[in-house]
Length: 527
Ligand code: ADP
Ligand code: MG
Image 1: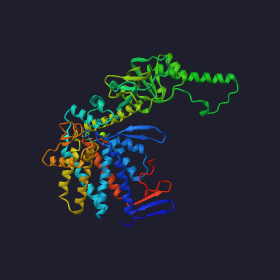
Image 2: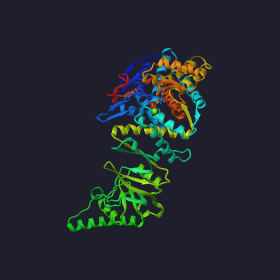
Image 3: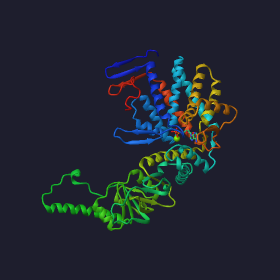
Image 4: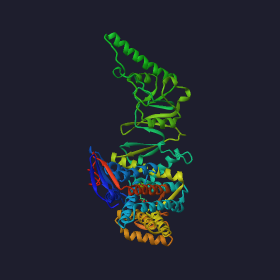
C-alpha cells in the first residue's frame, strides 16, 4: 500500500499505491468543486467557451461537465455518472458530482487514519443500501397534479426558466399527461421545438409534432386538413451516375434519353404515391427537384430530410407506418393528421396535429438563442423529474431536508456497527451534509449555523425542515412546496457510491504515453 511511486515503463506512465489514490481523489474533488457553485436556486451560472469559440452559459451540471472535456480518468468517470444520472432521472447531476466528491474526500480522511480502502468500501456499500431503505421510509406519495407541478417548479428554481416557472410547470405536466400511458412514459414522445424571436410567454403545448421545416416546393398546398399521411424512408431521387456506375454517353441523343428515363422513373414513383391517395409525404431522405414538381402537380404536400427521431414521432402521432418500398404502400400504411405550414418571425414551421395523439411538442419561444437553450435544458430537467415522479409515485422533501434526515438516520444505524465499518458509515452520513451545506454557502449564508440548526430541528421531530432559499429561512419545506422525486436521490446516492468505491479500489494507474500522465495536474487538458 505504501509503495507510492511513479515510474515510467517504456510506453506507459504508471502511478502506484497511495499516490494513485490521492490523485484520483483530488481529481474528483476538483470536479465537484467546479460544479458546486451552481447547486440550488442561488447557484451561479458558468460561461463555457469551447475550442472554436462557441459560448454556452449554463447552470446545468451535466452540460458543464460535458463541455469541460476533462482528461483525467477519474474526472471522466465523474462526468460519466453525471451523464447516467441525466439519462435515468433527468435531474440531480450537480448533486451526484458533489456527493461523489465528498464521499471520496471523507474516504481520504479515513485512509489517512490508516483504515484500509476495502473497509471503507464495505462501509460505504452498507450505508448506500441502508440509505435506500431509509429514503423509501421517508418518502411521500404523489397525491395530485399540484404535487407534480411543484416538483417541476423545484427543479426549475434558479434556472433560466425561473421567471416563468409556474407557466412552464403547467406545460410540463400537461405534456406528460398527454403522452403518458398509465405509468409508462416515453419522453421521446415529447419534442421541444425552439423558436427565436418572440417572448417566452408565447411558449405553448401542441398536441402533435411541430417541425422546423417548410414544404419542399412552393406550389404544394400549405395546409391539408385531415390529411392522409405517408412516411417514407427511401429517397425520391435517382442517385447521380458518378456515384452509382459509369455510363458512356457520347451523343446528345443518348444524354437526352438518359435524362428522359430518369424523369420517367421519378414520375412513376410519384404516380404510385398519388395512386395511394396520400396527401402529405414526409420523407427521411432527399426529394429530387423533378419529383417535387410532380408532387406539387398532384397537389401533394411533401417534406424532405426529416430526422429519424421525428419520423418515428410522426408515425406515432398519425398512426402512419414508415415505408421503405414505394410498391408496398397499402391504404393501411397511411396515417391521419392536420398538416399546416405556419410562419413565426419569418421562419416556417410545420404543424402535424391531431386531437387524440399521444405525442406532444413544447413550442419554446424566446428572444435570444442563449436564453432559449438554457430554458430548454431546464425544461428537460422538469420533464425528467415529473416523469420519474409519475412512474414511481414517490417524492421527498428538498432544500437539504432529506439529506439531513437521512444522515441522522444513518448515524443511528452506524451505532449498530463495529469499529472501522462504523467510521465509514459515519463519514458517508457526513458526506450527505455537503448538499445543504452547499445550498447555504451558495446563498451566502453561514453553512455551519444552518447545518446545526437543521440537525437540531430534525432531532426534535421536524423532519421536513430544510433551507428554503426563496425566503432564506429554515422552515417546513414540504409546506413550502420544495419537493423532488425520490428517484433523484436514490439514483444520485447509488451512482455516487458506485464511483467512490470504484476509485477507492484503484491503486495502480497506467496511462498510455499518448495521454497526459495522470500524476501531473489532475485537470490537465482543461484549457
Ligand atoms: P442538480 O443538478 O443536482 O439538480 P440544482 O442546481 O438543480 O442541482 O439544485 C438542486 C437542489 O436545489 C436540490 O437539493 C433541491 O432540493 C434544491 N432546491 C430547489 N429549490 C429550492 C428552494 N426553493 N430552496 C432551497 N433549496 C432548493
Ligand atoms: Mg436540478
